[in-house]
Image (tube, helix red, strand yellow):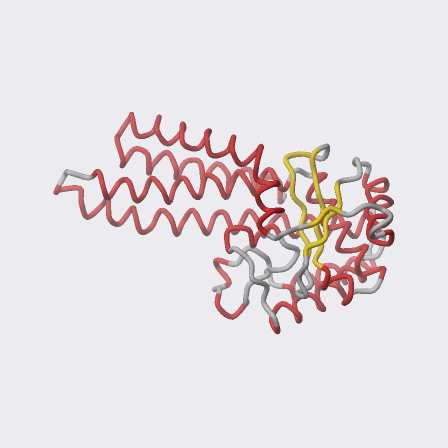
Length: 275
């Protein structure tokens, strides 16, 4: 059900891009919109992982340097039936984690130094399994595509206002330039929230212990609210919990479902068979 929902949302986002392109230059504008989207997606596909890891000064670690973390990633990858991704540690006291990479053969799992101090072994494994689920189901690629198309919508919306020379259409162009970026952001956030729910379920299936991830989410959300991470908003959707202050972002624009709902869903799995 969530997969169909994501396909529909991506289609809506692409359709919105075409509409904005039409406002910019009618038929030529649609072609321009497609070209911008393709170029931005190409760049994001090949370079987004390196960019985000460098952005957070993530350092690669080996089994010798971080045996507990590396072994957990390695054993859970085997259970998830994917290649073991590269392992990174982010020098930050704020506990959090994310996965990145264009596919399961070019992927990485990054955790902050703070998360290893806060969580017990089972909880940390729940978080890692969540990130591995993102890798396995290509959520990183889907999220990158959504973020890229949304960015293209914002860019073209600004161009539409700049290049508009039809006084009769000025009001509609300005309205579109305001509404389209908001709509694109809402759709992008909806896609991100759907993938988080699925990754939570994936974690429960891999570990067989949904309660561990539920406990981890409760701890992580509490820590994030007390000490938000100095994160770039454009990468907030990558993290297992929103690294930004929850009080400053309206629920509609949140990259993550409410933690309370995620925990509730996970705890219901305790009485259900994990397949």
